[in-house]
Image (cartoon, rainbow, N blue to C red):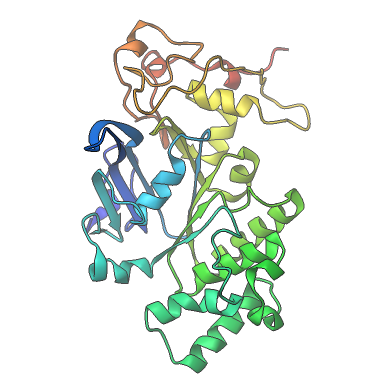
Length: 351
């Protein structure tokens, strides 16, 4: 990855000089075991060949329906789950096969904010102990320096220092998530993976947490991989957006182009469900997808989306479309664009 200003990834997108994180053809398959001998009877293809990068100071939104594999992507790139295959690189260094003490220095660079702000906090530890635990694990500072660091983190995320000795059950949901954010910041990471960090919170609290995360990003030059299913939240916080379906990325571009001119039928369907508060320059028709999401144990051949796609044709049923650059900076995995087809969602409104 040295001299990589001119480097181009395997999916055609030009990379920044040194991405904070990059994954190449990442796969995570969970074995299905049956019988008294626990023989492998199949695999759940949770993540099935995903490639992307996150640049310094950037937020990449990762969206899709429940069960599409987006949370597994986040946990796998942090090495909380071991990848089945593919590569994970941080600042150009391959960490795919590292474990134990070898991975420990890299864990300081990458942290996570979890979806459930209560289940992710140890109920037997005070808030100060929870936030300071990463400092203890990595041997950072003296006891006095750690206490001062925790106090400063509490103030930075909007919590009163007097609450440092309180326990998780004494906090509200929004306060608990602020504790989780303070813990993620303790080691001054470069990358934070947010695994649906606001989905369990009230709408009014969601806005506060999102604004806090954006302020922290500006202040500390953080990069985020923001996993979510709420497109309105993703549009607000993200710079680029990747859309996942059944373990694969089907579209990726900057948020403006994704929301104004989607190139994949699945993205089109997702966006058609987002309420529009006023008349738009573009026509948007409601699309109701038929059928259920296929099983990741036995995904359909060809394009995984063809069983629900209103535009599917014979080629879609047998040939898997590659994620490629359809227009500059806009990637999509769809055979429709081989012929220059424009999706109805992006068509100009009738006069």
